[in-house]
Structure formats: C-alpha cells, structure tokens
Amino acid sequence: MSLRAAKAATLRHTLAACVPDLQRHCSDPWIVIGSAAALLVGAPVDVADLDVLTSVGDARSLIGHWQGRLLATDGLKDADRFRSHFARFAFPHPVEVMGGLEVATPEGWRPVRIGAIRMVEVDGLDVPVPTIQEQVRLLEWFDRPKDRLRAETLKNLKVTPA
Image (cartoon, rainbow, N blue to C red; front, top):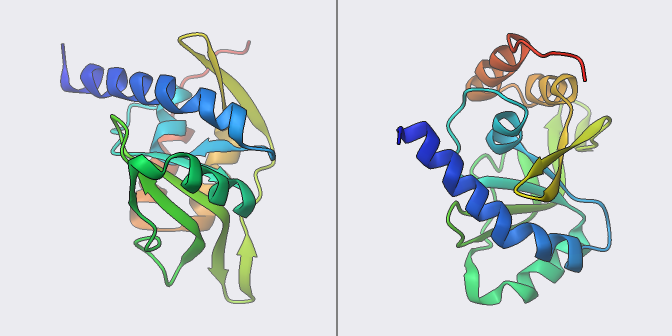
C-alpha cells in the first residue's frame, strides 16, 4: 500500500470514528475543511489532520463529549491570522475543531462562512465539504503559501459533471 493510500485509509478511520458523534452532538451545521476536504473531492494532497468548522456552542459540546481525547485547546497555529474556539482531539488523524472560525482582514475579524457545500459519501457516512469552487475561494482568502498551493491543485482537478 502506498503512503498516500495508507493516509487515505487513516482518514477513513478518523471519519468513521468522529462523524457519527458530529451528527449526534452538533446542533448547528458542521463542515470538513482544509486538506481533508480537498482530498475528499479528489485532490492529490497529504492530510495531517481533520479540520472541522463548527459553531462555538458545538465546539464547546464536543470538548465535553470528547474530553478523553482532548489534546489541546490553546488555539490555532496562525493566531495572528485566525481565531476560533479551538480544540484538538486524538483520533487516527488528529481532529481540529474550530468553533466560530474568523479570519483577520484589513477591515477587522471576519467570520468564515461556507457558501456552497456538497456531501461526500465515505464508507456509508455523509460528510459535508465545501464544493471545489468554494474551497478555492476560501483558500485564496486564507492566502497562506500552503493555501495558495492547495487552491491551484483544486483548480487543476479534472472533474466530470454528476
């Protein structure tokens, strides 16, 4: 098994372990973003963790529910650029929950809003992710080098209409 295939299998195990809890314990919509979302729509990217965008209330609920898996609540790596009610949990791939994620802009902090979503079926579970176009928009807005690279990768995907 290739390294990429092994990482995809680890992502499937992570989704199997956390999606049922997200469906049960989140009262507001949640969505997978970041590298995992890109992989789920077909981008050839590496996934180090599973980023889940939630409401602040749902992030608090998950911290309580997954207390035994809690690794950190000390915030995001790029705190000058992003802020949220953050928690990192131990799963096969670490799960990072970002409640009420905001991005710093010249006009001040702006909430991250996901426009268009699609459901991706993974081993019988429906996983919400932004559409490819929406992922590109978000990544270009985030504007870090890794985001720009991932946006270009997504733009170059050969997608067949459903």
